Amino acid sequence: MVPFNPLDWFRGSGTQAKCRTALSGCASLEEATKDVTNQLGSEKGDLALVFVSSQFASDLPRLLPLLSQRLQAEHWIGFVGGGVVGTDSAGRSQELEQTTALSITLLNLPGAQLKPFQLDTESLPDLDGPVQNWQDWVSVDPADSRSLLLFIDPSCGAINDLISGLDYAYPNAAIIGGIAAPHNASHGSLLFDGQIINGAAGVSIGGDWVLDPVVAQGCRPIGPVFAIEQAQRNVLLELSDGDRRDTPVACLQRILADLNAEDRELVQHSLFLGVERRNLMQECPSDFLVRNLIGVDPRNGAVAVAERVRPGQHVQFQLREAQSSRLEARQLLEASQERCPFPPPLCGLLFACLGRGSGLFGEANGDVSIARDVLPDLPIAGAFCNGEIGPLSNTTYLHGYTACWGLLRHAPLIASAED
Image (tube, rainbow, N blue to C red; front, side, top):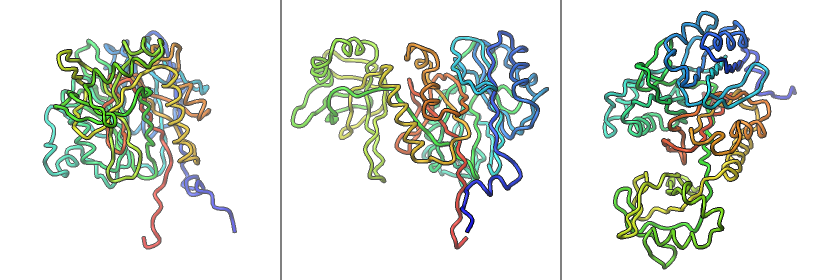
């Protein structure tokens, strides 16, 4: 009997999956577009992903016409970032921060179902209405969607509702993406099939391909896990640790007393709160969604957090620092690779917070170097965002200070014998 190779059919289809990448740091838009098109060659792609630094924002209307003169793709999508992540034609991946940069990825995905969508976010469907209203609005059949790549203009005013609505409409699709960087030009920040738009844009990925999400929040816990005893909306009033109850400020003071000098220094500017997120349909450990602490009431020891909370939930204070961020990102990428060891991802899409990069790691290419340690040949593209989009415990959230990865994998659905 001939050994079964899961790529035999894939290769036998007559079309090879390809990921071609280009990265340029040239100072002018004309030079940058010429540079990337020279790197990419002339072969047509199914999908072109374009990430451009905010330094080129005023020139954005000229970008796609310049690219389309020399490159061919069925679909174009991208956005303006506060920095750009890309891989040049020699396979070198970089994070280019606070400089002119242009990153292009051309994908050929045989067996994929790609459906780009553009959303006018001035008026959203009702979150309490029928799910069909959301699906009709997006114009994507959930049966054809395994993943959603989602980009949002910073002028969008209902981002959390938009993300919740897409989760509602596409519960089985991983949603990955980011919010574009703001700029002073009069047009939007999103690139969509030859247009510059506001609102939101994305592409549904189905068929034989899927985005495997990896969300690294970059924090480590300090102190015990507390239960919320009293809370009002986003304000914590009373926490408990075993039989001991106290105000959040008093609980934090006890934690600070046990920290070393270095961690006490970090508390002044890198303290966050992890809020429990439990999927009651699965028997798995709770995840903690890391959120900013936004205020303290010295009169009653209450603490306000950037997330609605309720009694019965658990919380844990968190510190954000470089070493724990490296360790967490590495562990999550390694776990993803262990779950899906073969075939390796065709490419990795990285949407990282503006607060990461060299500001967090103290050197360039922090997240990229971690990924290349785990997956040495992985082409990487993406951008530094004004907010990152990715799932935790099967629910999609808008994050901050996070690296949200989408690892593009060939993963054909296997039909049952009855089918």
